[in-house]
Image 1 (spheres, helix red, strand yellow):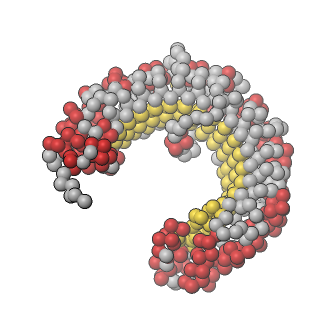
Image 2 (spheres, rainbow, N blue to C red):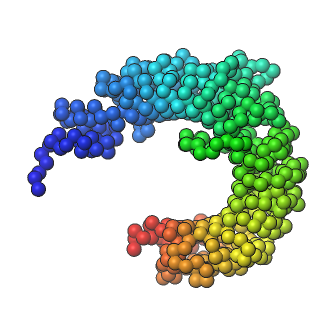
Length: 530
């Protein structure tokens, strides 16, 4: 076989394949080797497809020497996270000078962004943009507003806007957008104005201007003064399938609005999530109205309260039959009415498949027994529900082993999860996913017995997580026992994690445990070490 003496002697498609494997910074460095390499690496459009500040890149001044090498149609994505607004201004000025006419996605995070600076970039890319994600974190700044962005980007499909707005456009205490047009392409919208001096805004103009909207995410400072319509909001957005509402104090992550293809045809609201102060009259009215009018189309509901799920709210939900509902999540509620929740599980959700109760402190044995109501239940997650007893949990799981096809089971920080409960879990013939986290009353020995007695055949489990909280160092297995448990676990599950959470107060007596591999180990680590 001959020796390759020069990269440029390879076929052109192989040269490009090699160039595509390099980062932008690697390509810039390679371009300094020779004229032929400069031509190869800087003429490759993949180098310029995404301009990003990741990895401590500055874009400006780093790219200034290469401006003439960037074709106007090469740049598709701009991802700039900067600490100084002046830096962002320089980046946008640079892109305008190229000029970049084919940018499809823009993600910006900065203290502020004025309309003048932003539209310096829009001059060339307004028609090509399909997704904009803007996070402006300086309080009280007068930034470009989302209604202005929509006006100048007719082909936009997704807009994520977090930041302050110009409070001079306020009417009756609300920021009122100027939307005297119909935007026919936007399908996803997130608005969060909590950084404004007054974080309330009128939602109705957005709904009236966006007839094709499919997913709507709103973060309110105060829903009582939001101007959000209740009974008639769907008349403006007939294709809306997903609605998420968050109170200003709730943490919100932009992961919820990832730009992905839509598959639903939109025949009524399908996905409704509310993380609000659920005791407020406005929140209750809104939720009650949505659940009443959309009960036939909803397939996922999630309610997260700051303190409680009110009796009136639970009774309102239990008064409807949700024939299409397959996923229900209740979270972060210290107070509530167990009987009303039982009515929801026994009557309102006949086709429920996935039930999540996370930190619902009023959930008791009666609520747990009501989980036997939906015969189609396949996924059950109960986290931090401390009024449920071990006897009731073992009994319910035993019944589920006979009458349901439960395939997903997750418990976290549940004192009720004991060895008896583990024995009941071993009888679940169709179980594929098992999560046992913060188990204070289970030992490694209990878990080994479960692996020996479970009905699952070899590799039947897709995934198992077992994390036990060690209360007594005598329950910590020796190395030989631990290896035996790991061998059995690896034989039963395709993916797994095994861990022992030992408090620092106990670790002091056994310092050698700090480097013990089985204190926390995954299937990948185990198989790589074998």
